[in-house]
Length: 94
Image (cartoon, rainbow, N blue to C red; front, side):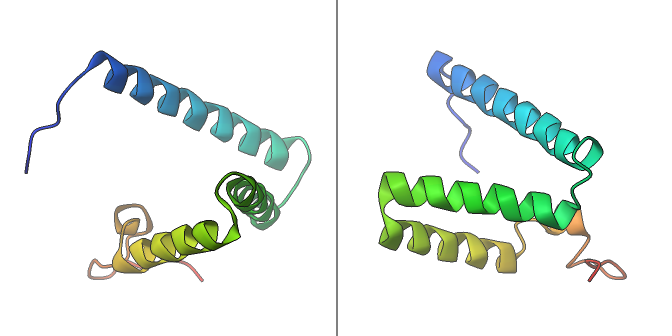
């Protein structure tokens, strides 16, 4: 594996990403705890918002292509370490 080059810009980008992740986590918690929204509804709202924004910025064809690529990565196991899928005895809840 090629070592990652550490730059000031890269560190700033990582901090921004971490801040966005924290804000999303807090917003999600508020939706569930304060608005009493089921997790499925929260996911629907987040995905719908993300898709609409991506379509506005990149256009529908590119957004659809990117969503298909993401779906392929999901099927290939990008989140198996979280879901437990791909391990003996592990698996996602359905």
